[in-house]
Image (tube, rainbow, N blue to C red; front, top):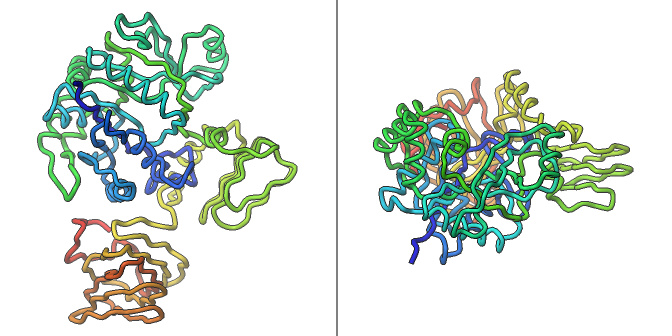
Length: 476
């Protein structure tokens, strides 16, 4: 009997083309864009059938480690490992780390590599395609999944199918890769036939991927091997060693291996797939009204056609426009022509170059203990709404430059203040003087909501001196 397939979910992307909803601090894979679950959660549940799959291995950035762990807990999925990349690299080094770790247990393990931010509607077709790919992988092939194209998209890579692989129905050799062709060429490919979109999903054994990576990128493999060998354990996370990992070239798996290996194969499939990689893709995936508009949240449109309008905060009204994107969050608004949707990442680059913070952070920040949101900021004061999960606690800390007032609006707070510990209930408050050691905990069964008013000459998040932290953090 064949061993279980090992899902490897890559969760390191920033999703800049879905700004202002997706940001570095909380990119699109962690957002509930298409259902009541995040895209990452949907991805993990998609490979949860015990007859086929083992527990997933997730590869994520250090910054998102608690988000990944919490979202897996919410859906009852227990990863075999959560592997932390110490700095951003493309897919080839990330997959190499996963393959090396998997090979320690079983070099012949079939890895099913999945981006964390795709939508797949037809799970029956998806699992059937995986079975074909796994059979090819066990025979030494490095397999990608080709998506049946529904139009001449210029934002995708394309794969031309070659001859069918003997003894493997539905599996074909790859004859050619073409990366993001111009529209005229993409149209010609559709007319020609035999082309599919490159989905960015892969299947191969750990051993075969490492063999081919060593053949074409020996320096990368050596760097990742060194990083994996020097890894450390931190709570439930596997931390790759940074200095070695930094020596790995920043290359995608396509450029590093798939376009070079003689054993590349493709399983073409019609999965109801989208990479949700732009606002145009979001528009196509959404429910549309009679005018072809997707209206999400607090949005109303009149005499408007073919548009995507999403409003998270105040009402957004759109009048007399055609083929536009309007996305409003609590602190930013995007207005764009649909034909320029792929250029949102360039706008994000300008925001970053201007020294602003809206490319990186939302107003609501997620921490392992809960969330906080800045409500108001002024000269020498800041007001935050804080939510602490049941049983969770902030670090024991102090501040050099600010004092804090806490008012409980829902739940129960256990407060350590200097040498005393007190319980606060709804409508009760306390004052934390500047320089006083303190900790906030939620001893109850329901979320704790409170309002924090900070006052002082400096209110930055780096004014935190930690003395004890259950989550092992040294940063804010």
